[in-house]
Amino acid sequence: MNDNKLKNNNLLEDNISLYSRYSVSTLFLKFFVTLLLTNKITKSVSLKIIRFTLIKNNKFLIGFLNGVYFGGRNINEVRNNVRILSKNNIYSVLDYAIEGENDEIFFDNAVESTLKLIDLASEEKNIPYVVIKPSSLGSIHVYEKKAKDINFFGENINSWDRILKRYNKIFSYAELKSVRVMIDAEQSWIQTAVDKIAIDCMIKYNKSSPIITLTIQSYKKEAVDLLTMIHSIAINNNIKAGVKIVRGAYLEEETNNKEKSVGTFFSKKEDTDSNYHFLVKFISKEIDFFYPFFATHNEKSISTILNENELKNRSFWIGQLYGIRDDISSELAFNGIKTCKYLPYGPIDKSLPYLLRRINENAVATDTFVKENKNIRKEIISRLKHKLEWQ
Image 1: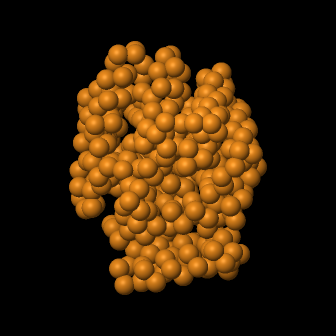
Image 2 (image 1 turned 135 degrees about the vertical axis):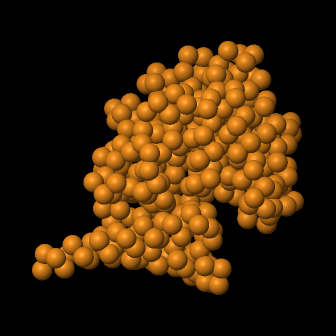
């Protein structure tokens, strides 16, 4: 394509539908779950029921969420989904989504899992990034102390050194294999320490290629300052900074932990949206120093990105969560935009924090999910009509 504008507003009928990977019964469930979660009256009760049944290890609900919003329980399952997505020219970003563990053995195992993902990404052309979760590489307690700039003593020094070694082991291997690594966002009380690691490692590893990508959350009022600082560092160190722009997924947690929360947050969605678009425009104007990944399901944000003249014929990615707005992902990819789905995977029982956060993100009463449900309804009607014709 000569420019990044969509050719049409509707998916072509002969374009392979991402919905084809779902059974009719799963489509019905996806339709009704989204309907309940995006309705102001039913949203709160539905969230409580889903949380309760997940915590109680309800196999039916867990199986449904695994099939719709989760990439698989292991590498083989996620690899199969990568190939399904690739039929639509959609790439995959892989994330080993286990959270909540807090011991050195787990942290070391997380490194080994990431190295295996890097191996897979080096073999599969449809995996441009792997994701690391900072809290899977070290103790939140240690990150938090470092973020507060508290002097370390004894075991804390050793713990921090081990954290740095884990990052460097991953990044040096990724550099060797020419695979990009995306650092996921965390809660504000540890994010400052994560940002410091990411920026220091960018200076070291992003000399010839944007190996490391840092996530910037636009619901934080300080997001512009962070992006501006990264821009200056990129200029001064002659590197291309990888940046992923998101709205943010921890607002409820930040609100409930005000005594620990660091920084200030936009309380209105409209303000977060405006900040997101400001970050897009800043990156566009300074694109020579950035390798951006824009994560969004918002059609206005996508239009903002595609209408930035400076981004035309330049390298950037647009990504959506697995199982959300498949219609947008397909249309972007069909029109030649580099498009990713964010594929979390891992044992379901150990990935509940991730699943619950994704459900919260999905539970937003916006046109985004109203339009998705219209497309799901079309797919269901088409399937049923086709079935009747063959009877």
